[in-house]
Image (cartoon, rainbow, N blue to C red; front, side, top):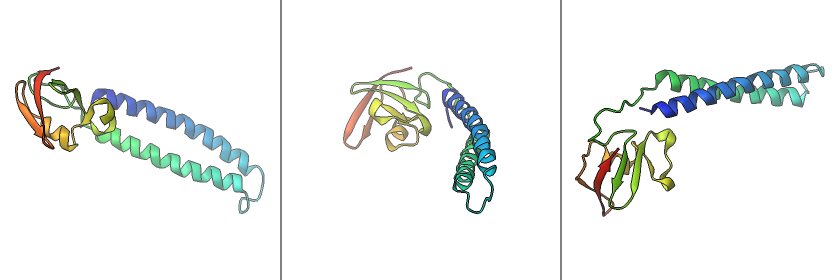
Amino acid sequence: MITKKTLEKLKKDLKRLEEERKEVAKKIKKAAAYGDLKENAEYHEAKDEQALLEGKILKLKNLIKNSKIAEKGQKDIVQIGSKIKTDQAEIEIVDSLDSDPLNWKISSESPLGKVFLGRKKGEVVEFQSEKYKILEIK
C-alpha cells in the first residue's frame, strides 16, 4: 500500500525518466553516425544507459500499475498516513517508499510501524524496551 502523495511522486519520476529516454535516443543516434558500431564506445555506452533507463521505467510502470492506495479511514486508528503524537515523539506512518526514520517518518512495514498499526489513542505500545503512549492521531 502507498499513499496518494507517493503515487504522485512515482508518476512524476516516470515522466522525468520518459523525458530522459528521448535524450538517450538522441545520444544513440549521434553516436551511431560516427560509423562502425563494433568499436564505437559512445554508442555502446549510450545503449547501456538506454537499457538501464528502460529497466527503471518498466519497474516504475509496474509499481504504479500494481499499487494500492491507502485510504484514510477511521481517524481514531493508526494506519498508513496517520500522524501520531506520543509522549516521546511525533511519528508519521508512511509507506516504505517515503520512509525517513531520522525525521520520524516510519514505514508501515518496519518493526516499529507494525507495532503502531491498528492501535488507538490512549494505548501504550512497547518497542525494544521503549514505551510510547499514543496521545493523538491525525
